[in-house]
Image (cartoon, rainbow, N blue to C red):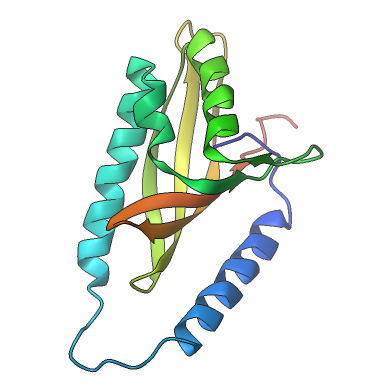
Length: 163
């Protein structure tokens, strides 16, 4: 998750995610025998968030990279997006060098058996205590080979006190 200032970008990304989910849902054949279990999906996403935190804490770039889809993208503010799992791992390697840790909590989850949109709050910190950041995030999760993978990722930092 990349730090960017809070703006209307969260609203725009939420709208894009909603429209994507709507289009995916409209184009799916209706199978009345299989119900999507959102509570089960929430449990799976919570588990994936803990894996994300653990990968950060341990500096495990392989585990971190495996949380992202091959075609994942992290949106940055004012700079080009980071596209693809291998490029995202390079960003993570910088976090490892800087001893960055974090924790995340889901505040909303919507979707279907193929795509989920997660809204949440998070905390980043440098292990030395030099800085910390709180904020909100949106993740789009995609089911890949039976596992939820991060497909789109963006972060909206809370304004610092006094700004």
